[in-house]
Length: 220
Image 1 (cartoon, rainbow, N blue to C red):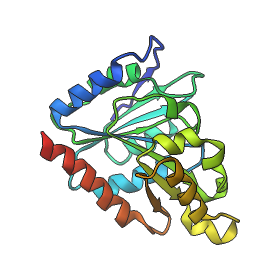
Image 2: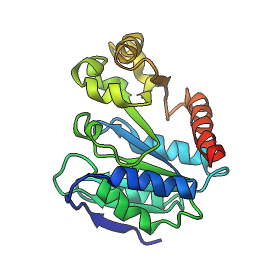
Image 3: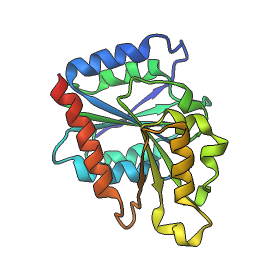
C-alpha cells in the first residue's frame, strides 16, 4: 500500500487534544503515545506489539520523524495502515497534526492507534496529543540516570518500558533504581522489563495493554 506522508503544522495545540479524545471516545478507538530517545527501540516494540495484538484488534500507526519514512515502511510491510508524519525540525508531535492525520484512518474499522513520537526525552513529554495512554521507553544502553535527568517524561507517563532488558548484564544499569526514582515522581506508573529480541516481559505488557484498552471499550 502507498504510505501517506504529511508534514506538521504548527498552528497551536489549544483544545486539539480534547477534540481528539472526544472523537476517539465516540469511535471507541484507543490511542497510545510511545515516547523515548532515538534508538531506544520504539519501532521494534510497536512491531512486537502489533504481532501480539493484531488478531484481536484492528491497528493503525502514526510514525513521527524529522524526515524520511524508514520506520513507516517497516510497519507497512506488516499490512498495517500507517501514516508518516515528518516534523521537519521540530522536536515533538503536535495535537493539531494528530487531529489532521486521524482522518486518513477509517475510525469505524480501527480499534487501536499507536503513535511513535519523535526520538526525544524532553519535548514530547510537554504535549498531550489526545492519547489514552502514554508509554516511555528507556533502553538499558541509555543508562539508569535518565529518570533523574529528565523527570518530566517519567512523571507524566502511565507506563515505563525498560527496553533491551536482555542486555542488562553487559551494562551498569540498576533497573530497581529506575523503578524507585520513577515511582517517587509517579507512584501509579507501571514498570515493565522487556526485550523484543527474546520476548521477555512482552506477555505482561500485552496483558496490561489489553486491560486498559478493554476498560475504555467497555465504558462506551
